[in-house]
Length: 289
Image (cartoon, rainbow, N blue to C red; front, top):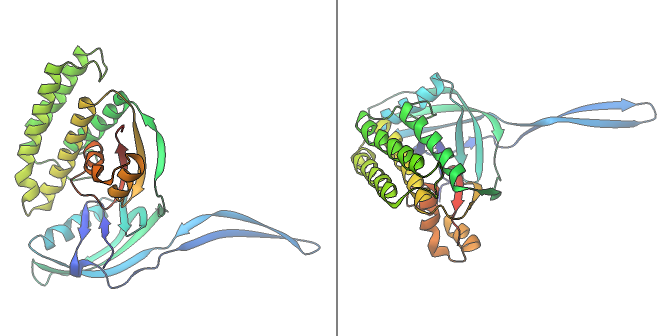
């Protein structure tokens, strides 16, 4: 079974996956000091990952669009995340060549210059985060998606109204609740839930469509809105957060909630799509058991 490969919001499938990718590993830059009598000391300047290179073929109705999406990452010098199975890196696309044979068949070659090697990050537990802090963090990411200041693509115009409605309903709820999540009234919570549903409804046809430049930000906004709704619905206890690469939510649920079948509760709390094995680097929120 081939390992999953992603760069930013782009996931590679089937023929798009490389027959060979690498080299993985890297160098540890050392400075050796030799002293009279045959003694020496060695100073480590740091570990540096290798540059990764591979080739493949984009296929399907969105082949050209997804190659172009990668090219925009290169052209704008975005720092993006690359994952390949348990391997994870942040870095930049240094070189991309794609030669369309047809809009549905686009051979490509890519060079990825890794900045940091995040492989083996595993389940790194972070301090429990209060509902107020969690909401603040999610609103920051949500607003970045809305304004286009985040690493993703511009928000489709059809989502601007529902997004503004959610922001306004959350602000009203906080104002009426003395600035705290737990103080938000049932009436305001219902209005927020309605705004979250409106975003999901408006985003659904875009996510199901064939245009990745529309589907990607729609999916981001939907996930962030769902996370905002989940925080407001359950503000009583701080949640545990884990930083993970390609997490297996079955295992996380069994470990922290005592029941592997509760993985969907973790996905909901984390603002993730309903997939027990999402691909990428995520901050996983584990709700209180």
